[in-house]
Length: 354
Image 1 (cartoon, rainbow, N blue to C red):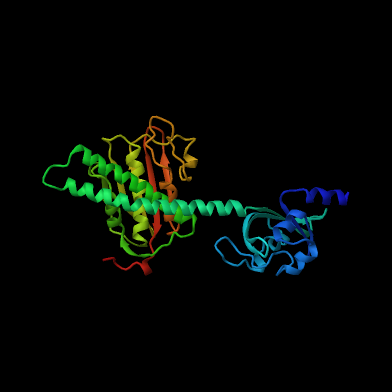
Image 2 (cartoon, rainbow, N blue to C red):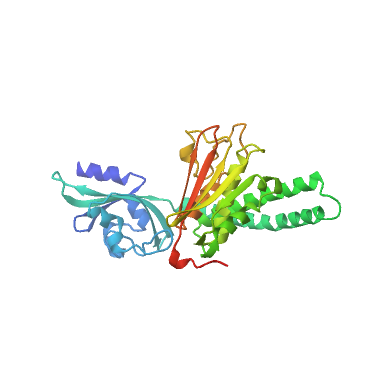
């Protein structure tokens, strides 16, 4: 029976590693050996820096994984490590990326007698994702230059003595939309590539909101009414402005052209809260759990579909969360929505902004 079980495990397309209660590797199937670039269990033990870990084991962002935090080490302490990404260097295959799951093995009395780890080799998928992100980033940067040129030309024509024609106004609107799409792609690529950097300085949040609204076309900006309280926060101004723009843009896009959008800035204990209220279509209840998901659009495929690629709110949430804040909403279909952005105020680090 034991030999039959070993044969079954060897036939599995995922790597299976088993260690005893002292952390000694006692079994690895053929897929596990192939992943590790070895031909035998003894060779795997010799090459490993630790009996249950390949050498140079690290996380996706390159940080070494301490021995005490190894998935199987944690499993030996009774923890179920459901989802873990591991990266290591193989002499035969180069950099390898694994998605793993580790669990404790218990005897009939519930005592832990070992641990098992299942690993799926996702190196190719990870590389494809990296190439895709690099392509998006490069394409977006290439688009930036002609878009800037077209927009500058159109604005120059529109500012001449002759009044701006309908065609020129439409040209500017179209370029603004393309510019927004490109910026969203760049933000998404930076976010997924770990390049979403922040530089925090004291800033007047009221001015950041005003700047964000000032980036809309005049007709759209006139629909936004702002009521605010002066609050200074430590933020990356450009990033937070981008997040506020995305939320307000969403409110404008999914409400009638004649309706208003109210933006209020208030102080709640040690937090600054921005509320963006619209009187638009609202979000159907079954779509609400997915609003902040990447590429999701609540009204996609309906007469209310306003276009876009569905990354604005996803990126906005990540920006706010990386500032230690949170974003959420309340909505009822056909009764509008209100989105809340809340960020902490650290009095010791926020001197009056100039």
